[in-house]
Length: 113
Image 1 (tube, rainbow, N blue to C red):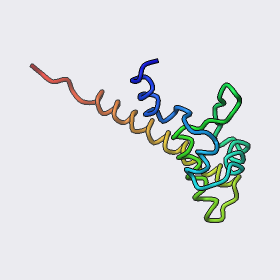
Image 2: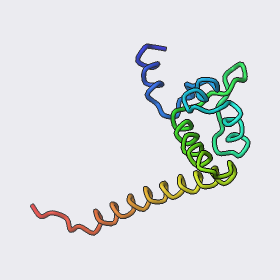
Image 3: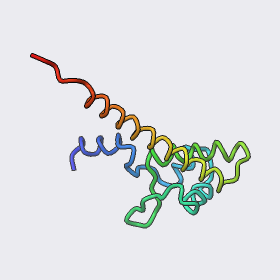
Image 4: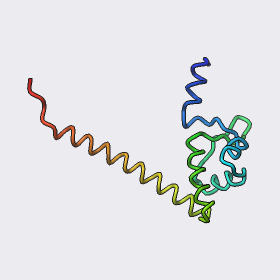
């Protein structure tokens, strides 16, 4: 593996670069909170060869959003459901925008030379 490969992985939002301890520290929460998010199936950390949980930046953003909701008094189960629904809505909006863009491109008459 080259240095460029390592750098590219660190820029990848889905690369599991954070240990559970580092992830909890980054979020200002406990490891138990991260375990609870896993039990609620909000995030599923990858496992190292030794079986240790590893989190990606994307998963940390999801966990941070859940923590915001929990800090405001939402139960962890409800917070997880809200975050899942928000994520689904964002994906639906993205797909809808792609369809609109494709429809607009196909509706444009071809340019004459």
